[in-house]
Length: 203
Image 1 (cartoon, rainbow, N blue to C red):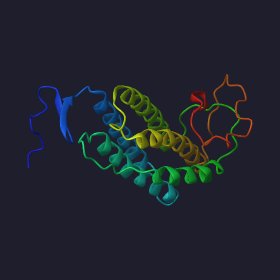
Image 2: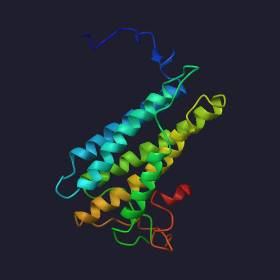
Image 3: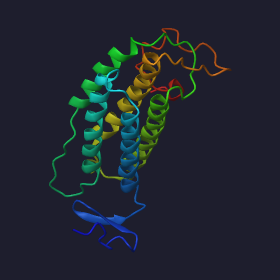
Image 4: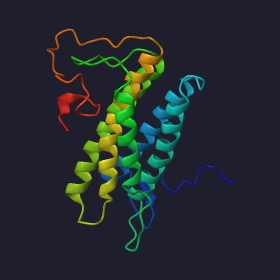
């Protein structure tokens, strides 16, 4: 089997049920999701299974779910059934609730970083936000029903999860989060009430 097909040499790519330009916003979204999945894979390679068995299971599930998201976005057939449902979002919310109780209470914004895996997870979080912004653009350009709305909800929750799990990684490795030097005290409840994420985005 040849890896190359030459069918995209003129700047077009195939969807499930059609072809579009490679810079089409739909392609941008699922391409960004692929980028996100790759960084999660990098984080997986940086985590010790003995210490992060639960996190590794989460991330494996998420990588499969991101493939589902990409596949659903690439499907433009008139008669189509999507793979993604709200169930993974509900599971992720449960995990966020558990993970947010593990690290020290949060009072101020923190700088992305810490242990290598935590830094990678913060990168994944920011890519998730980019994919979510691209989803908004896609929805504005699409007719109702042409885009699986569950993907947007999933990405919004995933950014929260990645923030929470990055803090857990640092906590288990005894690497302190570094507070943003000029941050006011912005988390009156220690960051518990809203589950993770960069609170500057307020969503």
